Length: 328
Image 1 (spheres, rainbow, N blue to C red):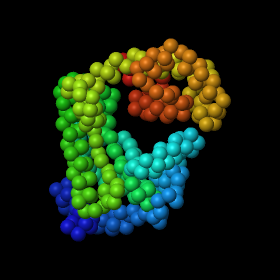
Image 2: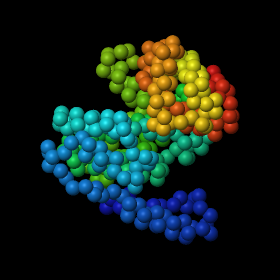
Image 3: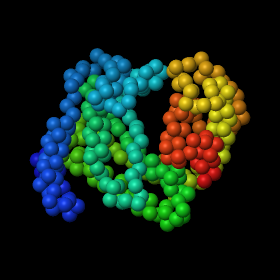
């Protein structure tokens, strides 16, 4: 952005074929114009007087329309829970806290890709638009905490790296650069008045940051976040594997051996209730609950991740996929 707060898109000429230089500048100008037309997203709602609204209206404005969100609108108990939380914040006259996970580095072998990109910029600006809609109806505003799952990624994707400690250290270096680049982006957007206006605040945190804050609050001796997190994950690994195995067998018996034929929990709530009762009666689920786990994994979520694992591993066999992620 320039000193007037306007967008400037500048191509890296060292990466462009000299014969296509003019075309690159032309495309940059087109992107620059598009960004100026889209952002910042103007709030279409009028301000409301305190006491004139309820939590349902806050959530209605937060959810908004398909043009300002990805995916379908929450319904049923999920929406009711959101409305209760919003109503509680209004009664307590406190900001509404929103939390979302944020992606970790895109590609370890290509550090140049791990920079704050247009997608990061758009995500932050759309988050600000959501906060503005909440602020239009709730004078105390809202906070949006973006949490980078750096420790989760370290365990799931990096801890078993064939290069061992060197692979882990490489990830940590790439991650730190990516995190700092996005923090700089948020700072620039804030300085130019595009985000964190009024009583709104977007904050980017890493799981490592959260670990440190928790230790500080409980007065626990500081430990290495990465080592402590991985140790706890390894303790939970067999417990979770046992739960996945036993609950998977129940799904197969209740629904179908072919997981592509499983109905969602909303399509057949009665059958889902039967599954829940049987799963919660198993020792494997009780052990998982003791470890701190909450809730159950519905069939639609299992189907989603099974298909995702198949895409990643190129392996249609469920047992092989579970072993890969639980015993690799």
